[in-house]
Image 1 (tube, rainbow, N blue to C red):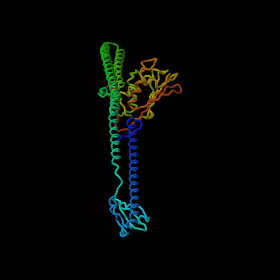
Image 2 (image 1 turned 90 degrees about the vertical axis):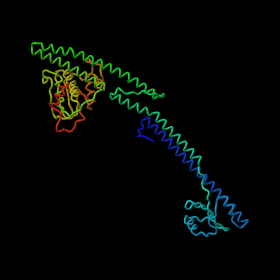
Image 3 (image 1 turned 120 degrees about the vertical axis):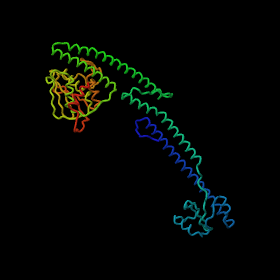
Image 4 (image 1 turned 30 degrees about the vertical axis):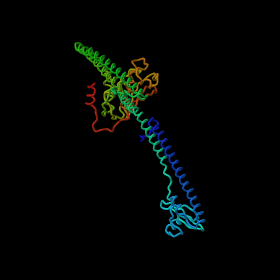
Amino acid sequence: MFERFELHSLRSKIDLVFAFALILLITLFTALLKSSYDRSLEEIAMQERANIHYLYLYYLKYGKIDTDYLASQNIRVVDAGGKDLHLKRLIESKGHSKKFDVVHVKLHRYILINNDRFKLILENMNRPRFPLELILAFAGALGLLVVLYIWIVRSIRPLSELKNKIIRFSQGDLNIRCRSERHDEIAEVANAFDRAVETIRDLLRSRQLLLRAIMHELKTPIAKGRLLSEMVDDPKKRRRFHAIFERLNLLIDEFAKVEQITSKNFQPDFHPYKASDIIEGSIDLLMLDEPRRHIHLVIQKDFTLQADFELLTLALKNLIDNAIKYSSDRQVSILIREPSIQISNRSDSPLPAPIEEYFTPFHASDHGLGLGLYIVKSILDIHRMELEYRYEEGMVIFTVISRNSPQLPEKITTGTKKQEALKGR
């Protein structure tokens, strides 16, 4: 009747109320049943005392036992004068030796009479009255309680279905339907959510269509620019134009990836990689002419982590790019020490706002759109990694901490795999 108990849930509260009601009903029925039984026994005992009083008076008057009267009272004579020794021993074994007493032996009710006039053992075949009305009332109340419970549980069952659909929607499933034909408050909530889902779905599709159209339109001039750059005679300028257009093409691919991440419409592809290879991939994405002039890499203890190579390199690339951009000397230090990757740069002052404000999209920023750390945090959340920030001794320090580092396998994705992942970008 009851599901797994959690006190904070509405279903558990309903279960608790009905459990108390059921316990109260059973307690009340038990008390009334006992009271009815005791009252019936008292009536039998009063009848027995009246019958014995009549027998005594009748014996004084006529000198014999009125067996016909006893039969009319549903009482029979079992023994007269103490002849049934076996029954007498059974009664005496229970410690009864009074002149008048009632003894229960093997579900039989015996009346013991022992006085100067006569000795009798009578069996009262009357039984306590069966409380049919009380049992019918209890059965009716119990049935009504069960029907009410089932009715209320069925009434709130759509809440559980709505919760599951909301969870699916939060995980990126935009094709859910919550419309209900019922006429209660739960149906109103479900229909309102269904309209909201439909509106959000239309907005997301419009945004995706717009972004794809923009990226498609940008790809065309970039491709033309790359073709025109081939006509440049100076090899140095030609390489520089190639790098610029390659960078633009890479940025468009990154925008597409960011759009997928932020819309929750993305399934990461996790594989084991060394942290050093992830960092090398991130540095390659920066497309710096001389990366060693700006980046100082120290590997104290390399480690392996489960990651989507494209995503994690994108996140670390953004951190390294920001560190170079906002450093006072355009230098950045990277320290790999299991289980963390630390990126630090020299700065005259710490971040002007708490780090949590930078995890929101389009936050107030003097440079850019305020999306850098939001993208980094979104990617790290997918990897179940933590990002810590601190400022000490003139250094801004960001630390990426991995909580999913597997045991070092015999073969891990390095070298060629890393290059394949980069080419896929």
